[in-house]
Length: 205
Image 1: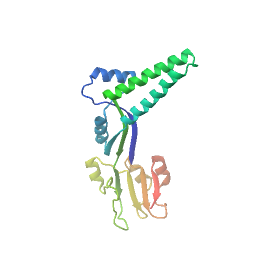
Image 2: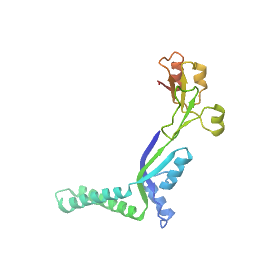
Image 3: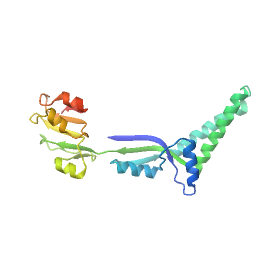
Image 4: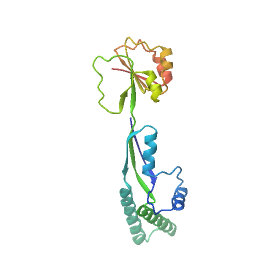
């Protein structure tokens, strides 16, 4: 499956002090602040593949610059605003200026992390035609012992009409199984209530 998230990340400017980065994180209530390289490494450690960081920091700076331009225009030409509103706008302007300076100093980065995670399939039966992996993230593992040794448990289990799946068999499936595919028109050989109780989706192929 695909995994995408967008977030503020720690900058990697070597000239920045640890104290400066810590102060920014504290003021913005950021916990476990990692830079893009650290985020990529963390994603890879938990099994994600093809992890990429799409750097959108420049786009964020342009957005701040446009906001600053608009706020400055209002302050210069909006004399009709009450003093309270003017003070708020001035504070907002100063905050935007700080953000632009922090971007230019490399205090933080903003962007998208895109990653994919392999799906482990257990083919309990021989398919009518040879199974062809159209995606390199689909891994077919046929031996339960091999899965345990390698720490890989199935996400998808494939059966046919001859492979009975009563409650005992369903309950014995690893907790990682999310999808049960049967190569049949009927479903009488599968305990659907047991699948539902275990959170397993049943599909026909």
